[in-house]
Length: 312
Image (cartoon, rainbow, N blue to C red):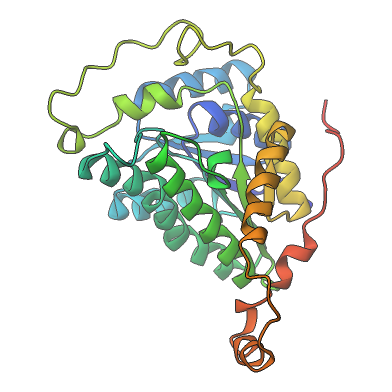
């Protein structure tokens, strides 16, 4: 999808962080965007920005809880009624809650899975058929995380959900080959967002644990702990530029931070070392090849290495 001018995007978690940064980039490049969020105050702030920039006509806000499937369909209908056919679905909304696998509760698991996995599924089931039907091409991007590639200690629930997004999008990219619709999975690193704060604020009462502390207002400059140096974090707009580049290139994987290369290599090498060091069974291999891409999926061959950023 090299030419994005005039195309319509549907971005969940679009009123702040990476979603808002990507919305700004899309609008700058001639797209129209429906920003989807369940926080009305965030939607209002985002629209105030676009009004100030004189681009509000290219943006339409929709208040939506992405775990509500009926409401999701209604939101998609509304987006099409306002702007027309949807070409890009960016499943970006997510929650960063859920810590240790050892200590987490059912409610911790349900909350994170409902949003981080269920929300992506709801987007694909609701929006993708509409993109395929109009035949004008399009793209689906879903936000995973660097912990969607290797585990982070004490972050088991989040890691689980983000690994799920990785597998889902790789499968989707394989199935969409030749349709004119691409699929990418985004692996953002440290970015200036309010993920931690919004995850707590948006958590429904029925999925809160007993005696769960009230979330204080976010600290000045974002929701990151004051002791964490956020000065090196990437601006969400730069992440958005990388998302757009990935869409244009039809990348399977969109990485934002090269700092995670060693961790990814370490895990992949560990997986390879775990393969039995013995000759494969020729007969068994022949049977397995009968299952198509179970043994080898050529889709990974088309992923290339992006060069230095070419945006302003």
